[in-house]
Amino acid sequence: MPAGDDSSFDIRKSEKTEDANRIITNYLPKEEGLQKKVIEAMNYSVSVGGKRLRPLLMREAYSFFGGRNEMVIGPFMAAIEMIHTYSLVHDDLPALDNDTERRGHKTTHAVYGAGMATIAGDGLLNLAYETVLNAFPEMTELPEYDGSISSRYIAAMQILAEKAGIYGMVGGQCADIEAENRTDVTAEDIIFIHENKTGAMIESALMIGAILAGAGAAEVHKMEQIGSNLGLAFQIQDDILDIEGDSGKLGKTVGSDARNGKTTYVTIHGLDAAREEVERLSEEAMDLLDELGQQTQSDDDFMSELITWLIHREY
Image (cartoon, rainbow, N blue to C red; front, top):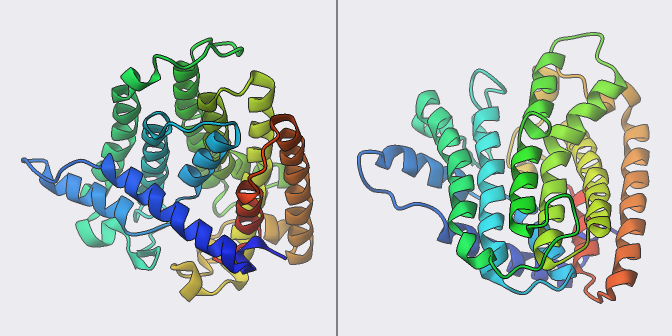
């Protein structure tokens, strides 16, 4: 049974989401000065809701490996949500998906206009890196990392930047745009899009949480694998929900993929095969997490419940 059906899980998820919102809000800029309007648009974009999936996963990965310092993980939680939000603001623009509703609210361009929404997205992306750079004083006592970069702080920053860039999310977005209205899109193309457009930032969240908590390179690699499975399953489930989901629960209109001429995992493989792949990816991710749990002797089951809920969610 998906974890979202369990009331105790729902309560814990709600509490943890509220706490993530508190942390993210602490890093949002004051709405003042001649740039006030773009800051308003930035803050509106972040504050109108959302599952806070990436910061939640980051915090849980941090806790899973024994991390306890909010001043270390908090800036990265805020940064990854800023990057995720900027990508949504730009995705919704008339030049891309042209969506006017997200998370049950008007999209940023529907409220502030396309021009202001564009620079609000730009502002959020830049603010993300400002936020983690300003956190440097809190990172000086982190233990040495056994990866290719010995500084855990620099390693975390590198992952955040790379997974959000042309070899991660932006690369996936590029392939997604290129695939629109094409009849020769392959299953491999769809996997590349999902693994990068969605999966890369989920991988980033899990890897950064693990690195900042003190995990070794081998453990961080396993977290990356879990993130890859989770991201792919998450996006296939998103493709499924775009066909048979409830607009009221989703907070956005369904059927946008078909309207925009997008080929998805479902259009290539069908709904039944898509559901089977979600299950396979889920089981694989949980097996890897169980392995890590045995190594770290972690007894907190919330992370596994969260992953199960995310993969099988209805909104």
